[in-house]
Image (cartoon, rainbow, N blue to C red):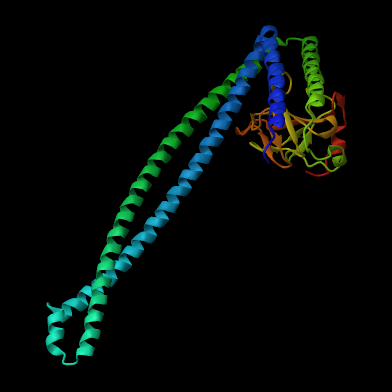
Length: 352
């Protein structure tokens, strides 16, 4: 669907407004909480590397597919070439059996002009057929040589991509190490229970403040054409398959779903992305605006596949969880209506 110039302007204003909010919060975080800012940078770097790896893996898959197609085409062309060569060989043997000067022998051995004409016509046909086979063989040979060059090019491309994947994986692990170090520094900073409680309250306030701002933005830029979200209560698909786990460090109204490593998070309903950045307490966070002022929150992701302003369809992949072996893969999920906290469990289907 082609958006009108008015809709594009509206979307640009939405993105600009939320970008302003995001940068403002990042600046405030950098001034107030150096360790938190360091953690934000590490997690944003991780999501960038995960997205780069996804692009590389897709490119590898495509290159392997193209190389397989080329190899199959080469095999098919080689078989056709062998068939053409065999046919030509049969014609050459037949011509040899007639000996040289086939046409002169036919002329001297025939007394019936009509029969002679037919034989000469057949002879011409066989001659043209031989020439056609020769031309086809040349074309097949050239085609085979071109395919061989293409296979070599694709093999080199695969080798380059493999090197890129190795480099990106190393950089991803380096970013994860930075994240681990930042988390350790934050844990060291919180020395007493009172300090931890103060940090948790501050994180909750950060979420509430952001949601208040987004609720205001959502009133100005309601998601166009979104399905009626309110009708989905009790029937909303789980954003990721897993099991509910207790987590005392998250907001009391949301839920935490433990999933398999690297699980993909899917939008349970249509809407538009209102926020896609890092937030204290919830890490990499994606917020989708739905109809009637409803918001859905997806926290603790390791990679975000959507940006502010993007439309999302039901079931579309929007984020990914940690895919490192032996590490936590948990998603924080919450439903709000503007700033109003809702019982998230009441919105979901009974089973994932």
